Length: 626
Image (cartoon, rainbow, N blue to C red; front, side, top):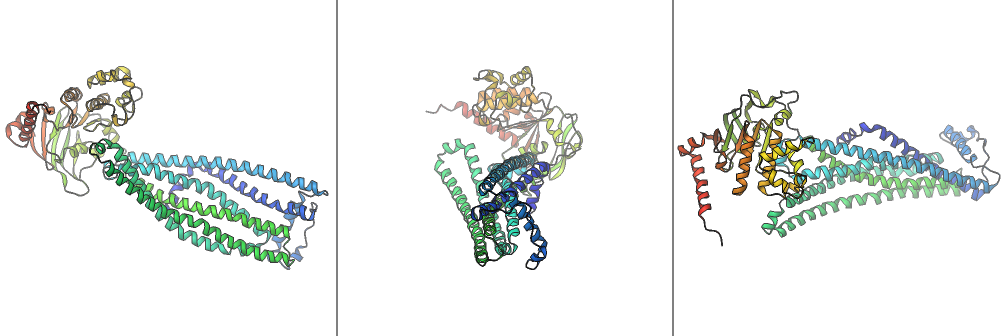
């Protein structure tokens, strides 16, 4: 119920749509009840060819009270019946029949109009609510800490905002449209049955507790089975995303059959989970309908006997009562289906709320704002570990002076990227603190921190958009000359102008239509255009050929001028001009100095440099492959 209550919170802003829909739904149900009430004058005309004239005198209440439990209700019933029948009274039976036909047409016209507006109100409400949920979920995801995305599979996250939201959409549609419609119809037909003969109505309702008990029991099973097949759908989405993103590797290693087998196993698991869910949901409708039929059979037997025995139940009233009871069966069956959809949607809602309940990264709302680095970025006895595992960084103390370039080198797993992530506040230190000009990073508004920061990574992220929009990411009003100046500084303008549509060329998904060097230079142009005072370069020139590396290196040199730069280097040749080089190993700073100092010490840096120098020599002197 808590999940359902949280969903209703999204309905509150659109209460006018809800009220309009409920109003039209009730009137639609009311005129549906009136439409079956037309059985009374119709059967009276055909079988007796007489309708009591308007203003009929009602039987003496005292006489009615001798046999009825609620005499006043009986008086109202007879008065209402007389007034309704009087609407179609006429000395000529054919004229009376024409009145009935015209009445039926008008009633169905009004009923149709209210049904039309009911659907408009409810459809608009449904889409508004789902848009708010989807926007809220995306807004929250954008603010989740980086650690969440490192632990959660991308496909599962996508499944939350697509498949799960779609299931909630179906639930909202059924809850506010199908449920209100069928519940209203059930109520109206129930009132009609009670007015005609309350004893028979109560007799037919004996099966309702059985239906309620069965519905409650089956709801738990539906929610459990639904949760299972939704989890399976998340795994399928994740596999699709990973396979499509890594299709080059799949083909290069000839792993098509392996991936097909893995995908088939997951779809089989989804199939079995879904079949279990459908078996339970399909079972609900016929059992509910059968229980409803049992109530109708009781009415047929009891009411038929009353008519045959000449009791106070007139034949036309029995037909109307029977029509009301039989019309109740369809809403009962549809409400059973609504329950199935609601249980499925609640399972999806629980998964969505699990994401929404995940704490977002601290925003330091109301915190300090900064304008670049005037003194230094300082680490004071900083340690960090992922999920209480072995420390990734241990007791780091350093200063990065304003306007200088500090390079981080070391073997894989030494903690280089982790240290850079702490500066960007993608993670927070386990102990110690990081400051900018003496101000703790935790006290700085995260928006202000990242506005002052530019990041160029080894794995360049480009969007399936134009070159122009990728460089001017998020900035719509950029002068042409400013944009091209950034591209020229990144050694990118020449290759961009040679593209088929120049700056309007679409780069493809993740920039697939460009080479590695071209993608890297676009990323550098984006950083230059942002003009950040703090810069993080995460192995920006690795995995490039010699020519591309030279172009990118020239772009990097333009980028780092007058900026406080932290550069992670895989190729040591790219950081020879760094003001200071830090050598990390097992999460600690083991060496520090300039390139010349470190080479002369004969330590870890010297060995890494000699190893790369030897590899370069071998690459230059090796004969070409045949």
